[in-house]
Image 1 (cartoon, rainbow over the protein chains, first blue to last red):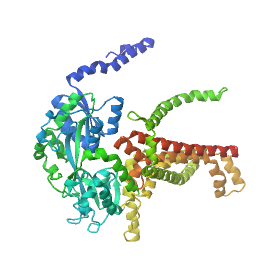
Image 2: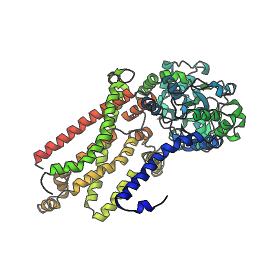
Image 3: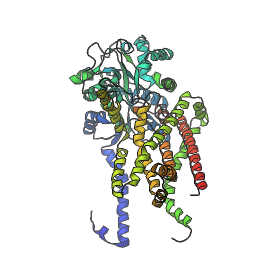
Image 4: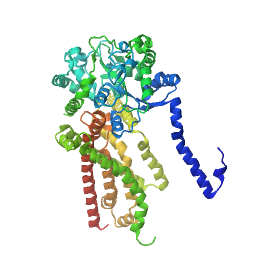
Length: 352
Length: 280
């Protein structure tokens, strides 16, 4: 662009400057529709850190190459922000990476676009496609420890053993929330995994009373569940398999004898500005090759059955056997209904 | 400077006032409205009624004030000697030391909280040194309890004590010191009769601002505290993000703001009346 008009002085300079400015401000509005038509864009809300780099390399970049859609990745899927966007009608997000309970909660509140089941290979997907949620992967929570301090047989491997403070003395951790913790308490108390739901809340609290004096920390921030083990503040900790793999470079122990399995979903925000691209992206993310590529990095369990054998060797070592009868799958619908009341009781109990 | 300093002050303060109006008052009004109104139910005091009956809220409220008061008081005890020392230094040395005070202030709370676990933990630096000195295993619990919270909070709050105090101390007329020394006052007497009373405006404002700041703390108690160190901010987060019950979240905010305003207002009134009584 010519510099001349800007160099001229006085009012003319100001006016031409204003003209250029107007042009610059207006340009995106004039240019965007055509560009959006040609290539398009969308916004994915997901998590930060290594999770984000994994999602970018296994999903976002290949998707851009294949479909020419520009994907903006934003950190932290916060359901409160979805609510705000729905209330104001100013929808900024397209695809939402949702943990189980918030996913189901959003579904109940009507925050997601319905999904066409025809987009997915229904037989291939573990857990089944719901009307507005597709299972993205499963994560495994269980007991972790430092093998340098606790050799074979010296660390608890099931929740019943996690409760056995005589055989396995020392402090433990739990998440500072009712979901996961109450399930672990009932499994420890002998409830069969298949009969967990609806949770016997009173029984769960009775079971927790026994372990409460041995809890070193009710963990709020997830990374702390491992860092407390590393610092020797606690002997055993409720941790996640994929995090043990990445945060300790696979050096820490994690028991696959009994796990809590949680579902992660993908959802499309209701009224998403780039709905068509979002649909394409979700479909793309569920393709067995993409599932395998992402789970090789994340170490979580793919929900595509065909993807499982394609996942890298090292990542597969950190996945539980999904047919283990000792494992329990968290029931997201249950928690979507009961979350507030049960969590409030839980928090009061922790404080007491 | 001509007449009517009030009008001149108003002129210079207007932009800041308008900005504050926009970024503080508007959202605040929105919060107050949210606490009593929702699109689904219309006007309702349900959120306040629910909180009045909630033991969780009452306990968190109590803990919040307990931790905030302790944090402010301890920061004052730690910050006062620092400010006093700074006020006696030559300007250049003072500038250097002020940077030292500010360094922790520039570090992220999250990073510092993790650093404290390395220092205060069971196998941390302090316990290791104590064990080495004692020749046997010594374990002083300083983490995941109230002690940990206080260490984390004072580390964050001390700069907020030092700076207003320093301003107060530097404003004291040096000839007063000369006068009392000539009259034979010993250093402790000088401190109790001159320095402390004349620095009271700084003490009050530092205590107030650190107390008010503490009421909103969130990460430090979550990382360094024990199970009972639950602050209202954690509860607000719970209702805002996890249960999406914005009425209750807003109501907690309004109640907290109300109580804090009451405390701060009373303290300032008290300070003013004392100032008038002393004739300053």
